[in-house]
Structures are given as C-alpha cells and as structure tokens.
Image 1 (cartoon, rainbow, N blue to C red):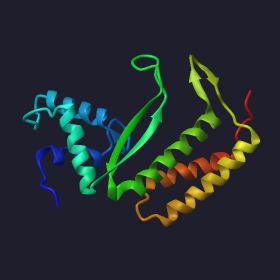
Image 2: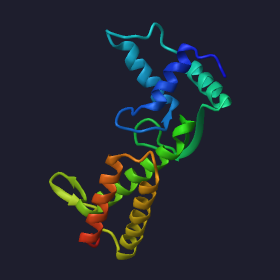
Image 3: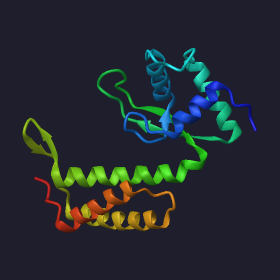
Image 4: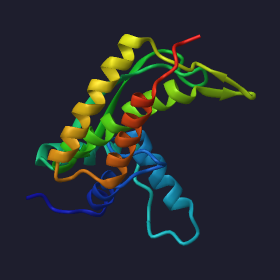
Length: 179
C-alpha cells in the first residue's frame, strides 16, 4: 500500500465526485482547475496549490498502485483554444469503472433520445429534431438492453433508471422523422 499524501488524498476525493455536472472519469486539466478554484476561495482548506506536474506525477503513482485507471479518448477540437482533434487521458477510481461506464451509457442514450424527441431550441426555432426509423429501432433495442443492465447492476441509481425509463416511453410514443 502506498503512503497517502495530501495530494493523493485530494485527487482520490476529486475522482470520486461529480465535477461541474460531469461524472467521472475526469481529465488532469479538470482536476487542476477544480483545485485552483478551491485554492482561490476565501475559506479554502488547501495550503498550497499543486502544480500540474505534481498532479500528473500523483496520478501516475495512483495508477501504479492500482487505485486509479486511465483511459484515453479522442476529443474533437473546439473553435476557441484548440481547433484540432486531440487525445485526452481521463482518470477514474478502479473500483468505479463499471458504474461510471453504466452512467455514461445512460447519459449518452438519454441525450440522443431527448435531442431526437424535442430537438434543439435555437432562437425560438426547433432544429435537429427526429431520427430515421432504423436508428429509432436500434435506440429502442439499446435502451431495453440498458434497462436489463441497470436491473442487474448493484450500483445503479434511481436517476439512471428514471432517465432510461423516460427514454423508453419517448421511443414507444414515437420519434418524429427528420425534416
């Protein structure tokens, strides 16, 4: 077992919680920004702000100890800071990998079905509403499979089950065809 330093405790605590409405896994950049916001508060508990290199080193120590798992994903570029696609390493607690994957799957399906059912409101006009029939069938089967996974999982929460049940009812009520 590794010695629990303050940085290791901080990072493990951050990896266990939702940051800015985003469940784990988290990137090192998000961890650093969260620690910086905590450090800048007046009633802060942090004595010093860990440097970015310290955060990466601590994350590598936690990976080598088996407490944290790292995954890489390709992120599309944005129009502001980094317009090119790039790889982002995301970190999560090893014991929460299956639960986080289940939560991510639920959130992804919910977002896709919600967008298909209600569209995106842009200046009072609904855009990008609807899906082709074959995609609706695929989403319906994926939603039913996800409900079975949620029922079998011990770590499933009521929020995910409610979201997927709502998706199932929206899919059964009908999704409009794209315009």
